[in-house]
Image (cartoon, rainbow, N blue to C red; front, side, top):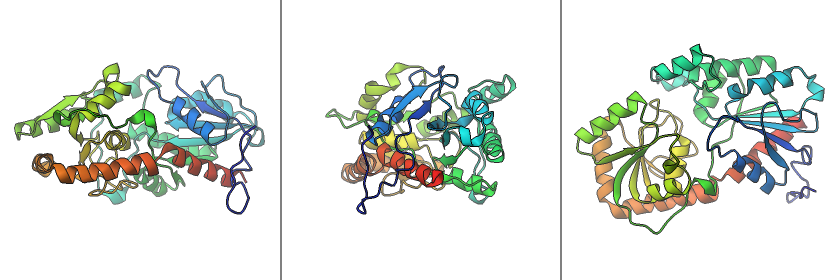
Length: 339
């Protein structure tokens, strides 16, 4: 039996949904998926949860279907749900964390689409996840009312959807112990960039920083196990500064910030549009590209101030910005909507 969660008034805010099993949808083609942490976290909150594919989830009204990442990847599941009368289908939650365009108020432009992104669209690849395709799909979800609770990972995404007349709630990407921890090792890498190095914008910026004298070690390959799990945690613990160079200027690369903060490395980032819940100057450092080499060099030399910010950032992500807290907020919203 699920444990009861009581407030000071003695009422369970999740009572209306408590007891409903949660079906966490996964893509069977994704390697090294960490979707299991959603199951674990829902379990900690008193809910039975399991990982299922689009073809295998239970679609009865006594269930909750949770779609994380990108609902566009789960159109077969959504088509199954659309065919069921609303009162007979499960409660559907989408937690969208893949890129969307910036709102007009940001005054920012997305980087041009890559050949790979265009190829996925042309070939109707299930892995499509460019901002424009994602935006079209968000509009479809809003129009057909196939989702009961739409949440997004960043304030920027929320602002963009609001401009489109689509209501959403903000549930930030958050820390789980699998993302990293502190190790007692020497930090012998001055400046690290860790991410997909096939992105042309990143390659150009990294080359520029290296020409300006910044000792950047650039690593990253999605399919290489050396950049996942404990190997990644050790690499980050060996680093003093982690650069955040997102695919699109102004984009909040939340997971890169969490990985850096949980392992005690100082994140130096391009300016981020609406970085909430992260605070520049408090949890990480922002610098424009023209100042990034100079700013990073200065922080590299200031061991005391660097340690002060990394300690504060580590406490923030491991004690405040936790996945358990984010999912608790998510379930409270679901209970309010279901009620």
